[in-house]
Image: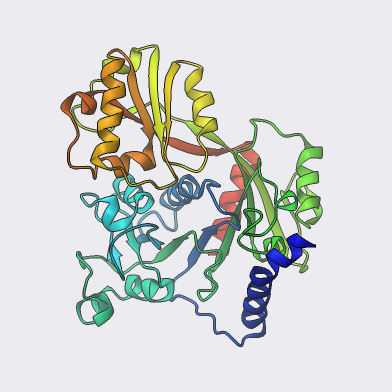
Length: 375
């Protein structure tokens, strides 16, 4: 009873919002080019950034989109700028947010932009000439972008004003929706029933193997009927075809955060790890296979590193002179923003890139064919 009372305001807000959009009382907009929405309905990391990067690679590797102007549009979480911004690789996480900056640096030929208003942001990407005249773009630092042919919308499943061409929903294998609760008691920021609005559902961070019974069980819990493990497709609660796929995490060899990084440190058997992400347990497990983690330092998700934070990390580094210092790719974008970093720390600081992979080759083929056929 107490739970229902606590959840009532949030439940009512979501219910009214859902009714307004489904009834058409609140208008939904479509961009002038195809759009791919990547998002979740939980608070915390489900792997949006590596999956967005996977989608970019899929588009770049396709015959239709390889020579097109591809854009990524994000809100730029925790950035200190306003309005539309074109994310440049030489910028900072303070200006654009860590995840958009990471993608801009990884894919220099892809336009990455941030705008809290995704409708306006998509319009600017389609008509970059408006950046020169619109008052809403007056604070944009770099207006030199090409007109886009396709937009990947990062973390936009809750942004219902923009009606995407394809909706891809991510769900953490370790946090099933049917066992979670709405905020503020649980971690759900939307109704679990909204899974029916997704065209493709990807269960992320899975173990390396799932049998057919486990896959079918997931489909059943998500309300997908007549699910076929061969086609990876079934029927949603609303009677539309829905694709259910499963991915896992792959960590790549460490790379230096700074040009001064000395790769000889990666051969050490001792490691100091610091992170500012929602959950670093998988990374710890991966690193512990090769290194003895002598110190782990946890900061809040999307933590902005201060000079005192880096001094503390440098102090731990000095106390362990042979250890390599490791962090995540997202954290590395924010660390670089910090103005006073010792040269010694720069030599020993490495990031661990992350990629995702489908559990089977068939799933990869299904994903690529399904996505590209819908655009």
